Image (cartoon, rainbow, N blue to C red):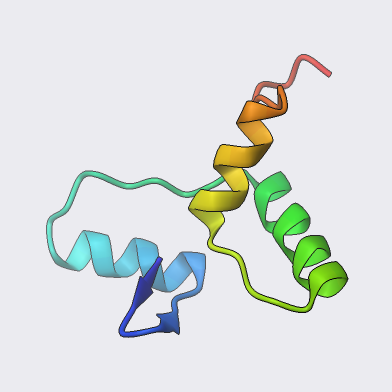
Length: 67
């Protein structure tokens, strides 16, 4: 969700996609945002949402509400 190294908020990302008539929209689950914030605080560096979501899925996380 970056353009020219500027992070867009989820709402800005959505509006940009709508404005460009782009139907390929991927808004990560809120869990991904929380895990990314925790990782950034812990390791002192930034991580992309896509990277965090990929690692979470590899560790068995799903975005279902099955508990």
